[in-house]
Amino acid sequence: RPPSSSRPLLSQTKRRKQAAISLASFSSKKGHDRAIQEYKKRKEEKFQKNAVLLREYQRAMKAEGYVGGRGASRKRVGERTVVENENDRDDDDDDDENEDSAERRRQQQHPRKKRRKADPLHHAKKEAERRKAEQSQLESQKLANEKAEGRKQHSRKVRARKLMKRTRRGQPVMKNVIGDMLSKIKSDM
Image (cartoon, rainbow, N blue to C red; front, side, top):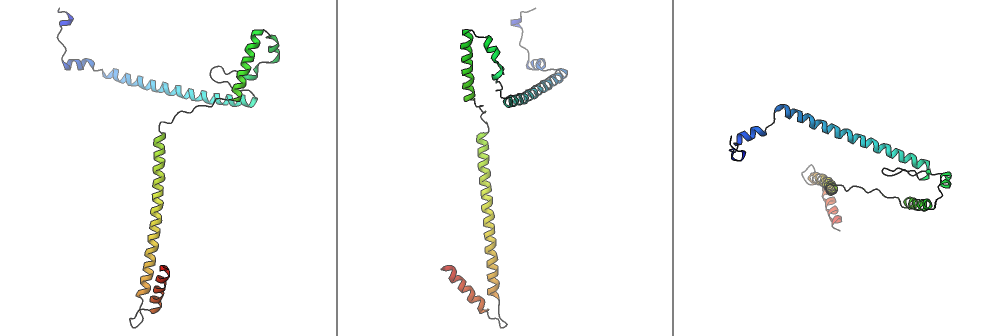
């Protein structure tokens, strides 16, 4: 048997056949992918449900006069009673309590604002809004121009009808001709 290093290289077709997977393994992988997607979906739903519950908890705590905790601790600020404070009168504990109360006061005075995520489509949305506004402005201008043109056409028709009127003998009606001349003079002034 020759050593593996001197073994001739596999042809391309043989390599392709070895790399190909069977139909059964392909279909099972498809099912595996679907299962992963369903798992992620369930996890996201659970996360959303927990977030809703946490918000309700914080609202309830605020209504009771406590500050709902943030993160994993979720400690209540007003939970320690006077009896517990009297029992824990060591010098070291006093310093810790003073530091804790000072930190709590600082947090109550300057609550942290929740940072919002940057919208990845912010520029695209702005551009779309700008285009939409521009489009609506052009549309309104077009409508106004159409109305003005319609009025002009109507007035031209009325004027032409008046000037075309004739007497029985075929002469133009002087009343209409003179009225037209007067209106021209008024519009020029």
